[in-house]
Length: 392
Image (cartoon, rainbow, N blue to C red; front, side):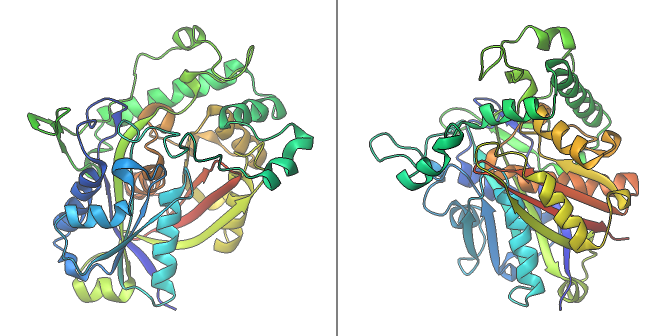
């Protein structure tokens, strides 16, 4: 069976909603990252057999297979195929798994896993169109009525905080740490090698002359006091606030995956090997606890234990989700999200999975650790996890 390897992984800087990337059409934003990926590896894009792109809000500018539209925006040959996948917050983490599995099955030799989202131009929830019905049908609604019915993810995050006995102080302290780690990583240049600089565009899409290579959401001066002044966002007297939840963001990321043999033939040096993949499902009410069983399954398939894993990128949907996951698995938080996460950097929905993998690949090299794990929970009660091994 062919071995799937990562040749390179890149991303845009992340912009706040209505921030530095707001002037970019999301197909062009993703196209810019795709072009940057092949360009810096001196790879003829005609060799790319498929682009698998995660995107969640597939309406408006993100409709009609944004993966294909991004490929054409990047200037790739028309022969390069693309598809768009939606597994909610882990859409592009699933894209990485699909790409690697395609290589291992012999279906691909060269494939790109990518993700994009503009929460500015395709706001979260925009795909639930008034007048066209709800996504949850009568059968599913009736199934969960006895337990109080289906709830928004913020209420699920509150339920997780209650179940794992996590206090508001615990959640805010974690959020402060996320910002501190992200600020330190940015200041020390740890993100520089993974970011494709982007020209800032105005609301009409015209270039302003500015170029950005910095993540916009990091707030270095975040403190327990400033977070403590925020009101609960989802439940009266609750613990979940805007400060200990993910930030809406715009961004794109891409991972170049090949068979080991094809990489050698092209003279490209693999940076990591894809070792194992796993999915898990939990009830759609608690919803975001899925990374707990997904992590366990991925480790089992990799024939590894948590002690073997040097670094972990866990999606920071809410501080309660990360802390409950860590508590359940007995994790040392010193190796989790060492460069901050979505609370500080932002969460461009369909991009976040490949952002996790991109950051993990680069930080494994920075630290010298051998194995890394990426995991993310998803609206609806599913979750993804994968294990990679640093090479070289």
